Amino acid sequence: QVQLVQSGAEVKKPGASVKVSCKASHYTFTSYGISWVRQAPGQGLEWMGWITPYNENTHYALKFQGRVTMTTDTSTSTAYMELRSLRSDDTAVYYCARDYTLDYWGQGTLVTVSS
Amino acid sequence: EIVLTQSPDFQSVTPKEKVTIICRASQSIGSSLHWYQQKPDQSPNLLIQYASQSLSGVPSRFSGSGYGTDFTLTINSLEAEDAATYYCHQSSIFPYTFGQGTKLEIK
Image (cartoon, rainbow over all chains, first blue to last red; front, side):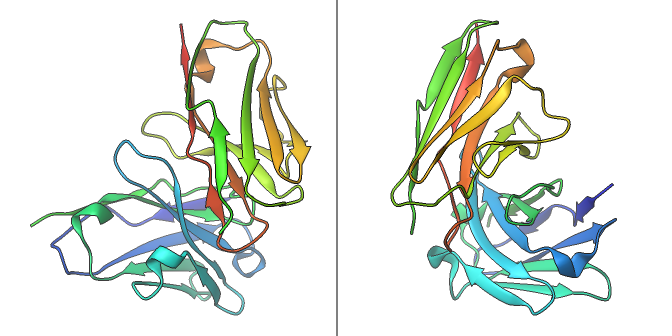
C-alpha cells in the first residue's frame, strides 16, 4: 500500500535550518504532487506548500516564501522540505501528504526550535 | 488567499446523535473541498474528497455535500470513536488552505 515515511525528530537552535525528508513507496512518485503541512502544538493544520515531482514546480504559502524550499529526488522517490532562519514558533510537527486530496500522509516529523 | 471558516469550533455531542459541521470559503472553490479527521497524536485521515465523494474504508455514516462556497460534513449516528478534530481543506486555488478545525467531544 502507499506509504510516506518521514525522517526523524530534529532539535534546532534559532536561526538554523532544518531539512525534512519524505520517502514515498508503492506508487509512481512522479504522478502525484506532494504538499507539506505543519501543526504547531495544540494548533490546527497549516498548509506550507506544494511540489510536483516530475518537473519540481512549486507553490508556497505566502508566509513561508523566501524561507522554505521544497525539492524532490525522483531516483529515490523522496521529497524534501527545507526551512531556514528557524524561530521558536516554527516548533511543530511537519507532515508530507500526497496529491490534491492529501489522501496519504507521512507519520510526521517533530521539529523543536529552542536555544 | 482563500479563507475557510468552519463552524462550530467545538461541539459536545452524545452517541447516536447526528452532527453537522460547516465549512465556508471566502470565494468559490467549486467542489475542490476535502474533509479530514485527526485524532490526538495521529496524522490526519481523509474522510471525504471533492465535497461529496466517499472513500473506501471510511464508515458510511460520514457524508459530505456542497459546492462553491458552502460545504457540510455530516456524521450520522455518532459513535464514541468519532471523537476527534475535523478539518476542511481546499485544493482549488494556490495557496491551498485549511479551515481552523472543529473539535468533537463525545459526552
